Image (cartoon, one colour):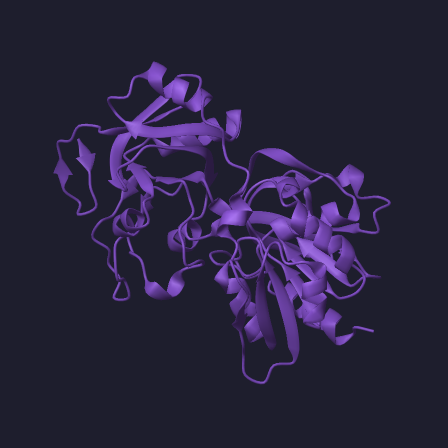
Length: 371
């Protein structure tokens, strides 16, 4: 017996399942696109904001398990997307609501996934699944039909390699502009998979923004005479994005820089620090972070699989500015001399708490005091 979005109980037969390489399976019901997919499985603990989550390019190729049990209850609205494309690999929920209650909604979550060829599965024991990711870690998963044998599923997983070109696929292909009234600064934003609310925040703080592809050279960027350079969030292993690392090596010290999430990791690598993959990452809107300069504790929104190795920061010219109070990982870096800083979390808060929007003010201050 399965409870569907209209509240009715109906007899149903499982038609989809998740398969892991150890043979573990989770049965459920399909929604969205009806196709198989191999993805890296991750979880998100946010209680709201599923539209912003599924449209966040940082989730490229990943199967997202939503820990909150009911997803889709307020539908999808045209104004709330974080990207024009959906790049996630799959969506896994306990219960999906196909009858949203929201005067703004224009389509259901299932319709959105179907339009963008993203498979979904509901009816899964997401509590057990999240505990599995926490205990074992992020890993490959196959979403497939219920008739696929366990042996066949394991073989598909073992013979499928996860891709390493996520940033290349979700970055813009040519530069574009986001202007605001009475601008005070011109910012070049390197798009590694950028969320739209970052651009909106920069506009709100008086910045005209020129968004450029990830592989734009430092010569092209500096020829635009920016007051500051922003490096965006994005998916995958930061060491795969060598073009941006090389660009930042040649820009640092010449213009103020601000990086978020993947941008934070890329700044660290450009200065000579190292990164490593976390067991299951940080995902959700409830991570306490301490600003070491002010002593203030911020509740932050996070979404990343990699972190900066604090043991490799000394001697790079950077210093640790923020730490995560749950596991003491590096959450922020800065160089006062170069007017460069970065954070691992998302101050643009879409979705998430708004404790950290002051960081955009810090970027404005650095551009104002540029020598």
